[in-house]
Image 1: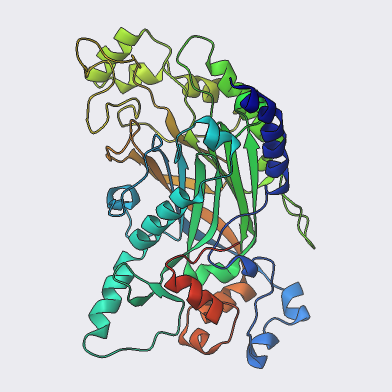
Image 2: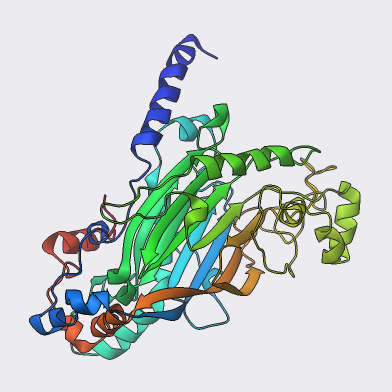
Amino acid sequence: MPVQQAVMWPTLVASKKLNKRLESRKFLADYPGYAEQPLLGITTDDQSSLSTESLLSDQKDTQNYRVFVSTWNVGGIAPDEGLNIKDLLETCNESCDIYVLGFQEIVPLKASNVLGPENSKISMKWNKIIREALNKRTHQLFKDQVGPKKIEVKKNICPNEEGEEAPQDFECIISRQMVGILITVWARRDLCPFIQHPSVSCVGCGIMGFLGNKGSVSVRFMLHETSFCFLCTHLASGGREGDEKHRNSNIAEIFSRTGFPKGPLLDLPRKILDHDHVILLGDLNYRISLREETTHTLVEERDWDSLLQNDQLMMELTSGNMLRGWHEGAIKFAPTYKYCLNSDLYYGCCYHGKKPEKKRAPAWCDRIIWYGKGLNQLQYTRSESKLSDHRPVKALFTAQIRVSKVMKNLQSLFMSERFGQLKTHFDVSPTDEFICKNQSSFRW
């Protein structure tokens, strides 16, 4: 190592550690100011239904919301502008209420990215692709309606891929990056007023035990009266015997060090397992404890049951040591790692010259597991994009949400035509319009 780099190393490390602590609760969103503000713009008639007497006597109701979750290690490969993620977002239902997408290695895990400032250009590109994919149906409907004459749009607007103004069905409520880990959360526009207290917590478990080449970015928020926590993780790699202990250690560190503010007025959940609904997603890197040749043979035979009996994460879930009380849906898809690029062949099956560059036994590295009551998994599968050496994994849940009857009536108001007449902080201000015209509605 050159003398100048050796001198700078301690300074860079100290600065990185300090910045992680100071910025752990900063995130990007379409409208970050709404989270800690009361619902504004309610008329006198509406306020009468929110009187102290009605709130005290308010009864609780339960509603089911659809939550989409995905994880994808993209191997440091930046997406093309025209990347089609339709297959990734496709579910057994037409649409969901909340979309949570997690990525690992959105940038190469080299020293300049681990020690330097986050390269937000790539995360902004991913968010742009997600925004356009989620709102594509609305954009097309808008174009069909406009025809030769312009119609007035009273809802939030941003330019679509052709630069035309179009209403948005989904908005980003949280987007946070730590080195190569990115989690981005999107909600239906009419739900946004009922999403409160979003917060993030970053935990680095990589180099020196705290740098962000490995670790987690966790987000939490309240939807009505139910708390959510999503953890996007990238755990220690390695396929040798005993490497799973490093992954277990990473999980213990993440559970111990992740923390959220309790809130200005409410005693909000501060630790991961205190939340009502907890979903952990990511490249967990757990492997299959079999000889490489045996693993390849069982994969060729599509004998998932024999492989899963030796899956390290499955054994952790069964033993209840590190992940007591956690659940995973039935795996009925092929291992998601490690593929030759732009191929359906696993490493060890594709040859560059005489021998493969580096052998890797297939494994289900990319997983989604959950904790807490009231979550019901409807779908657990993978997508087939060949962008990286991992295949994306996705899951669909229904989540039970506690809703007060007063707030339920208010939600009906927000979804009605009267909402367009209310002047709220969701109206597009000149500043928001400026941000939209620059094709980026994210701001600190």
